[in-house]
Length: 319
Image (cartoon, rainbow, N blue to C red; front, side, top):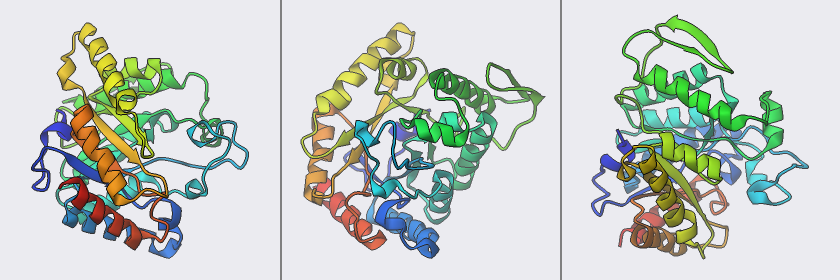
């Protein structure tokens, strides 16, 4: 089931997959009439360079005076002021690539009616020929929950029910129904279902104790994050994954079946060599076999700059 573990590319001969975030935001989307072309060009050329995966994130607004700022700070970076819809970005990427996996890190699943979320993601898996890696979280911005009309309180339980619906819809071989706290629907035919069987692998963010328990109970893998240069890989990957696998074993699951995808968030001052070093360390010190780089704070001159950074990072990381 875990496509992120089992599907290899020609470029990933050392069993380390390296991907990149799509140009959804920041300086990469300043020219509104060129966003679609920019996403397509980046996806196509990144795959030609040897990128193993392409990723999309999820934002709907950047509050001017946020209750909780980005990364626990007081503000939200200007790069998040405008963000292309993740389903649009991945659909564009799916139509111009053939091999690269297509992931979300993360989609805030609780913002969406579960059936519509299932339909959007199923469509991407179908259009891409079965390359989807859905990654889910619950977000950090109360203002975004207010903006989409979803209660902030109880978001963990809402995510659990959303996962219930996705599991039912994606895995069913006939009519499916659901009767829950937040959504109910009668027995119905729902399709098309994803190409991947019994369903695409589901990766979950796991920063809090509750979210790590959720990964252990029902996730195929953990979405971890490494920010900056001096990354404590033991803290962000090794220890959380060890804990999650131990909990998974108590749930009767095979702990080795739970993987990890590491999101690398470089700062503006980091070089491709700095980023490549983080990726190599993650492979050697934390046994990470799939990492992707979000270039939003580095690609200050747009999509061409992002492609140059991606190309150089790939070459350096695979030396």
